[in-house]
Amino acid sequence: MNIALLGYGRMGKTIEQIAIKRGHNIVLTVDKDDKDYDITKADVAIDFSIPDVAFNNISNCINNNVPVISGTTGWLHKYNDAVNLCKERDGAFIYASNYSLGVNIFFELNKTLAKMMNALKQYNVTMEEIHHTQKLDAPSGTAITLAEGIIEKHDGFDHWTLDEDGENTITITAKRIENVPGTHTVNYESEVDTISIEHVAHNRQGFALGAVIAAEWIVGKTGIFTMNDVLNIG
Image 1 (cartoon, rainbow, N blue to C red):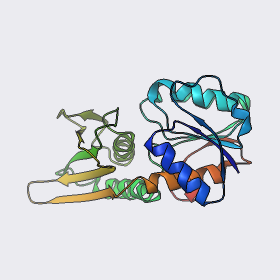
Image 2: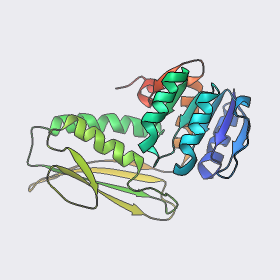
Image 3: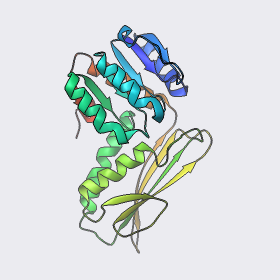
Image 4: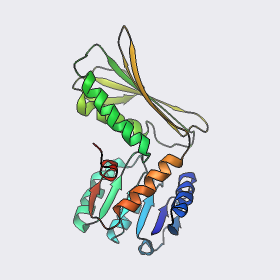
């Protein structure tokens, strides 16, 4: 399979290594300042770029009938535009805030716990996410997905905030520490005890592997998908 990498930072380079090990060809690498490139060389594109260029990358793929996997966060104010374009062009598109197979299991575990805790209003929910200092957005897309999962299953919370407490609010604390791939913790705390679930990434390999697996899965399909479709969970 011929793969285009849109975004060639540390994550892009890790994806390249894993894709080659799995027998694929990297036919195109696009950095943030590259504008003139032929995306049609690729059977599928994997976008781990930056927020300012992600939507253009995704649109270019869809307009040229190239399935696209996007893991860039911080651009989701245009997500519905990407979905509508994909429908209009009968394209293929997956966005995930995190492609790690373990994190996607964690997302489902988070929803299950939120549903179980719904009747126990004495517990307040807080979240903490820790990432490397190069991460541009806060809170992380993974943290937002976790918060949205809680809101979906727990009627005691209807929004999240960054570093601010409030009624019916999930407070997310974001920390940036050198060389931390990603740690996410969800805490349910009452006066008598605390229940916590946590995912700790040890390196970027898990994110990259999941993205390549998603790229393998989407080729030959049309539609808007999630990692739940790829992993057949949820």
